[in-house]
Image (cartoon, rainbow, N blue to C red; front, side, top):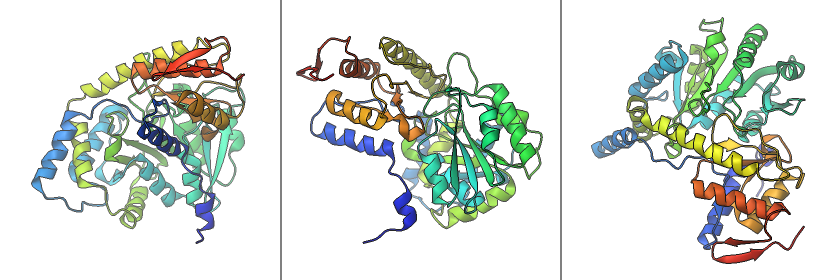
Length: 405
């Protein structure tokens, strides 16, 4: 059986592959610690559960408008006004089955074959693959100074006559970096001047630490017309810990949204009405769960950073948001795929190779699990890598000795 050339070129999702490996090990009874997870462990807000259960009890589970149910669209409009200081209308919103689908449908809408999309490294694993799936060309830009904060100089040098869009993800997965207000102002001005789409992936918008704020891109927009090329993607997965409901949305000009509705109508028809009801409940309900999650993550971030600082060979830039950090492990091994597999085999700890995010020699570690998992997971990594650590460790009920260099 043969598959298309396009399908052959799309890389397997590293995060999903590692999730599956962890699941199989746990099924065998192995004491695996998952530091690669991309979802919070906190409970879904009660208002979301209540709204979805009311819809289920009605037994009236039908198709919805492709763009989303009116109550959810109104909740998104209000959220945008309150959190972005941006007034929009229903014609500027489309709801999708997750922010990932929102991004895919957007790329399907705006990208022609051979159009270039600038992606800043470190970047989310799916950005380049989604661009390739619509026959665009991902252009990966790395800061020359090695920082996680991009520089306009690095971006402008990569822009060509084929550049169609730039994707910005701040707070950033995988680094946890929150881009500065000056940078957001510059990139908005630059894209408006060059007539380039600026796509803001704001899925971690509320999960920021140390009093920082993820600056709304609209603050610096001069083009507020219905031809603006400023696009915002967001959703309920991260801030409400509602990953399983698969609800995201796109804010864009009327023409883009109309085209995205046509695209969505031909692939998924509409998101699940039960999930849309849950998202409406979360957005309209009590918001204390968001702050509770943020505080938990900030505390977990502090613990993970302190644990990593005890390594003799690890370099780390403390994350300012999300629930990930991206330490530099090049002092131990340059190949991050080999290192990740080594840690899974020897220490039963799941990590994600930095090469998947455009930075070789780094590992993405998640701190959205329990404090126990964080401390024990980092202790196992240190035992496996750091020759200055004790030679023996208990993993589960087994006592293991480090017999490698």
